[in-house]
Amino acid sequence: MFPSLKLALVMGLTAAAGAFAQGITLDSLIRSGLRNNAELNLFRARAEAAAIDTLNATIQPNPHFEAEAGYNLTDPASPKGGAKLSREFQPGVRAEQYHVSAARLAARRAWRKDRELEVRFAIRSAFHSWQIRNRKARLQQEAQARWENLARITAAKVKEGRLSQLDEAQARLDLAKAGQRALGIRAEMSSLENRLALLAGIDSLPQTPEPDSIGVLPSLPPLETLTEMALRASPELQALAGETLAEKENLKLERALRNPTVTFSVGYEREAEGYNLIGAGIELPLPLFNRNQAGIAKSKSDLRIAERERLAAESRLRNELAGIHGRLEKLGEQWRNHRGEIGALGRKQMELSEKGFLQGSLGIFELSKAQEDHLSREEDALDILEEYYSHWNRLGKAVGGEIW
Image (cartoon, rainbow, N blue to C red):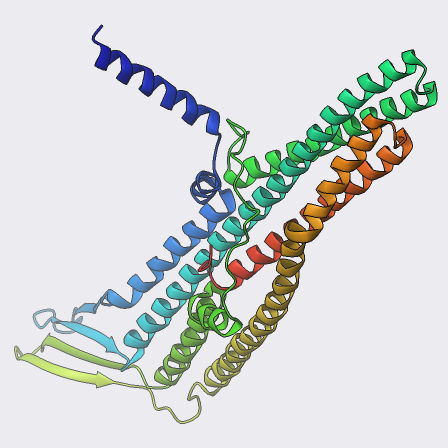
């Protein structure tokens, strides 16, 4: 085999193995969820069905045809017959019917987008929770590895008579506790992996999710910018605006329905005397009492409700954005503080405590307390990070996914 071909083959196999080992990503989970989610597919089917409603206003109504024939019993030689073609018209109704159905279709499609955003939000939330558990699992693995080493050192010192069996028991207890915590975190990760599979619309995850770098927090835009994004891109607001427009068009339709239905007709008739008659006619009801007052009043009421629902949703969204933005600022500050001085001092304390134990200036119980404190601080920091991403995903959902 030529050297260049052999090198290319080795590089190709290495790349393929690396791709298989990488696991599935957040983007692939979201794509799968948007494609396979059963409830989302139901929303799509309803939106497609709503599109059919617009056809009714575009199809011309059928004309009416009437024919009659008469037989004169007293004068059989003089039969009578005729035919009439008529068509009903109601000015403005068909156009408004189309506008109503088109506005409702746009609202239904916006609700479908809102449901797609819900799926993306749920997958992102579960994925980031899995990421935090994965980090906690690595912390426990590191703690377990340290205590395995310390348990061996303690056992050796017990044999030398430098430590008691109580010290050895404490070291083994700390090792067992680290293993127990790791099992609990693994169970939580398994539960989240099952949830991710369910949200992605698959039976089970084919591979372990690929960890992301979530320690570097995403940039938080100003509140004013986020508010502009939300008012422009929120599918919920778009859907409610579409429903409001549909009610406005429906009010126009109800007003058009008070116009009388006019029937135009043309006909032919043959008289008994042999005359052939061609004529035209018009028929319309007299709108003296019923002017569709009830339909118009009901439509006005529905329009007021739709407008107030939209305004209430906008106000609720503004309040939600302000609360989330303020909380994210505080959580971001806490996380950065931990990654700075607090984290550095905690790691230094742990290293010095282990060094002191190995040198004999620190006992196993003091070391155990120092290790517990360090692990507790790291887990508290990860809890802050998890809460940050929980609010970040809520913020992304509120602004229509613009910051994801």
